[in-house]
Amino acid sequence: MFEVREKPEMVEKDMLIGFCFDKSEEPETQLLLTELEELVDTLEVGVTGIELVRVRDTNKRFICGTGKADELVELARARGCDCMVFDNEISPMQQRNWEELSDMTVIDREEVILDIFAKRARTKEARLQVDLARMQYALPRMARMW
Image (spheres, rainbow, N blue to C red):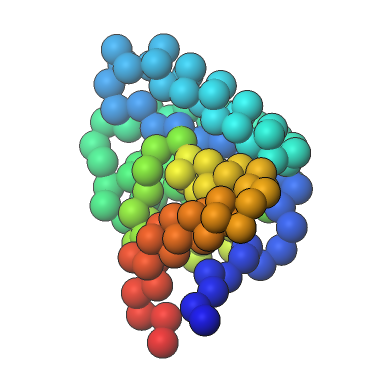
């Protein structure tokens, strides 16, 4: 049977990152980051920092510019993080790019929520539904894995 791979190692320290595309969205983005912190806290993972990044021009590769991406990775390393959690939805390509740049686990809000459901699923039906949701989430991320 097909099985979705678990994260390679136990994640202990996260850095949360949210992108703000317009100055007027800043308060809402900050609230969403606070909510994401609470979601990550539910998984009993430590948060070492929260970064709100203002983006003027989006970049397909990292959402933000390459210089800002390098800066965020260095900040995460300096804080001893082993995972970067993005509040914004990131594409499979962007996830791979961040993972290659940082050598860390990279996830987004959707994956955090799936992990919470997986942790709390008790019945067989609930576990099957979580497995199905994880497979649907993982499918586009499996490109070029063979």
